Image (tube, rainbow, N blue to C red; front, side, top):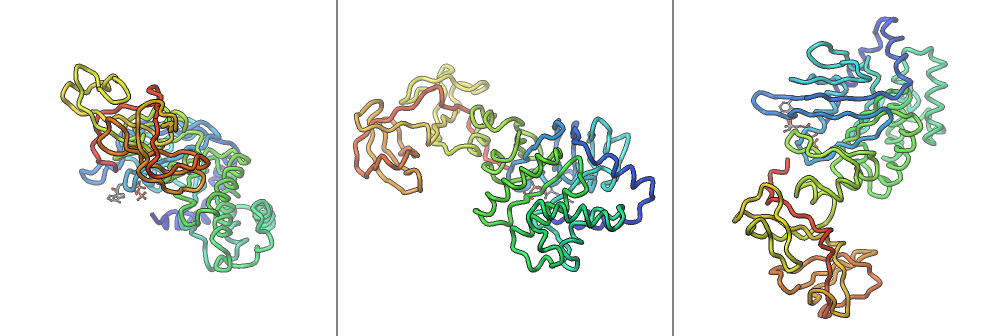
Length: 381
Ligand code: ATP
């Protein structure tokens, strides 16, 4: 998603009245509570967002996670003020900035934005790019502040160069410096790491998080990647079909996912379907309670985490045979034919065990770690 409208708003912000300027900057030094109350966004008959409630504490880092088209960017755009909600309210520090009673324009919300493609201005020097959001300050002060932040991200020596001369990681740092230099209360980041290669991404995630913590900006970060969300977010909001399916800490999403689709996002699982009989499911691992709301004769899915299966050579537990061993770095990915299961189970196990194809093994699973859900519709957006 391109954010050209935001840039053009910022360009127009050069001409704001002096009293508006002081208002915009005065509010910029404190982390803010960001609240969405019943936010909806309709396009014709289509609901891009449906009754979104999120309350984000001052200084908290929240990741918006979900498949393409689930409404992540729309929510960010509504928080920024580029887009208006069709219903519901957005509040910053309990002050309505969008809703039936008020609309505060983007340039007066004390929000910083960072885009997927970084959106640096090619015709401006790196220092000018960073100083871009400080137009209301006297030039010498703007320059000093921009240089200080450039130095913080380790790029002061590039101040007079141009964005085209920078690597992807360096451009990301400049974009981050530009967003952070006006000390926004709220940082909104739309897939800020997706343009970087995997190794650089790890490094930049750490650096970005450190900088967000230093500035104490309340942050909302859009991502497609559960691992990134777990790494960055104090909490994660999982969106699907314009709704918040679950909003919690990573540990809770992992241990107690709200449904099968959330479970799939946070761990690699074997899924085995069973028919419910008298409120229970009979599996080779024992009898389990059917999930609430699933009637007799309907299907439920038992999820066995690939990392939650213990494999042993002594034959404890259910008997099985290793059918396939695939190298996966620190772990081996095994496929094991297990007595009582129609399809092989996938198992992730430490590599030092040296499993080989054809080995006769036993497998054990802690029943308390099994997840059971109603069979999911695969409407994942
Ligand atoms: P991605 O991860 O691919 O960027 P997303 O989760 O950010 O996706 P949004 O960009 O928020 O998704 O879009 C949510 C839904 O709203 C999509 O189905 C999209 O087609 C639709 N949508 C967004 N903007 C408009 C618009 N201006 N007019 C009509 N539909 C729109």
